Length: 270
Image (cartoon, rainbow, N blue to C red; front, side, top):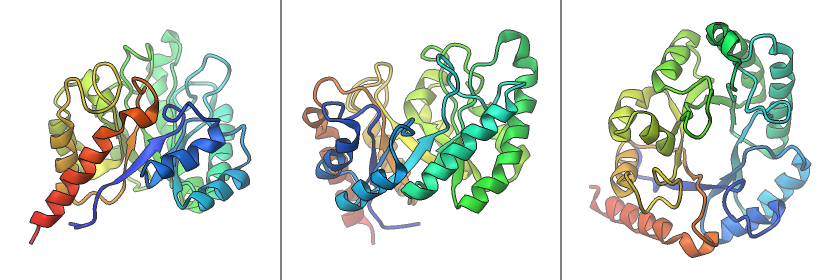
């Protein structure tokens, strides 16, 4: 267990959209986040992003693999697209290594209905081939169950799938992205899912459910969720990945409240 405070990351593909992409790093740091993450940063030179991160005194904890062709949402579970996934992974690992990224989310994608029966084997084989490259780059690979209301046809749509894949791979280089918003929409009761999946969790993301706004409304009791994460000694980041109701800065009361609750927790510890 750790007595360290929780650390929060801002997903700048969704937050601080009032500013150009590169300026969101400084905006997130000024708002009190310890890190940023983003979906697809590949239009920006990693050297430039690293310099901006260093100037702001924060890091970028994660990126996604490139999504594929226009309209696609990942490649890792698409039969016949193994070479495309390999190139996407190489691009993410190379970009991430320069920018100082810790994790890469390997996006499963939406296989055609005729290919879904082979998609699981494809996903497993692609991840097996990805592990040595991730180890060489010093990065961790993440896989994320995503709800099919938001992303119809997405292959990895159940935490049990992810749990089985990670068990088959047997490598600490592949971990679960536990997105509380998606988990609430997929199974409900994210605290129970967290307890079951804790040994394989590699990252947390948060947003209200069902509207994916600031984590201060809706169905999920975030003070309880964050207190549970902290009580288990979580030393990674908890990433805010939501659509702000208005300006990002105007909706950060939840972050101040989370900080105060965490300080109170630390004061209570012997």
